[in-house]
Amino acid sequence: MLADLAYGLVSFAAYFLGCLAYCAAYCVVYTRLTAHDEYALIVEQHNASAAIAFGSSLIGFAIALAGAVHNTTSATEFIVWGFVAFATQLVAYLLARLAHPGLSAAIEQNAIAAAVWLGAVSLSAGVLSAACMSP
Image 1 (tube, rainbow, N blue to C red):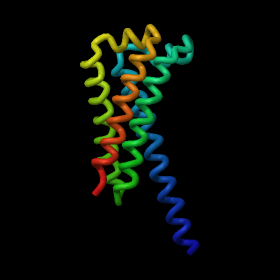
Image 2: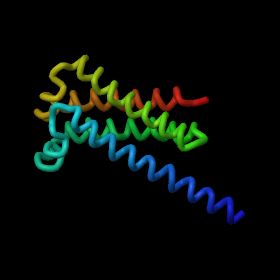
Image 3: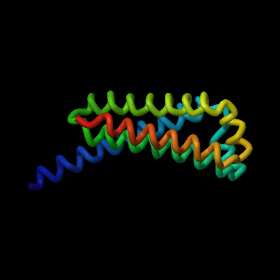
Image 4: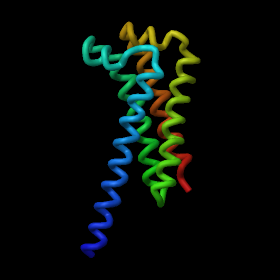
């Protein structure tokens, strides 16, 4: 019983640290991909649109990553499905930008509608990719 608990805690720690690493990498790549500076907009200018868009994107990625954790049985599978979730979110951003060519400018101008659009696309991509990872 104690051995099972220890194994569970080690497994939790490994997956949780893996998720944190993926989320940190995602934040770095995502903020480099966008034409606007999320951190300056959020921290310095208190831009709600940037916070909504970036936060929703991270939540969408976390949902997909949770699907990867739930549906994998090895570290290798988790790494592969985590990468799929990562790529799916980046593609979702590019598609949202394609449908709304002035997306970054709108977010810089604090247009909430643009942020909600991007957030909805990001969350939808996360939910759908998590669902598609099921066995």
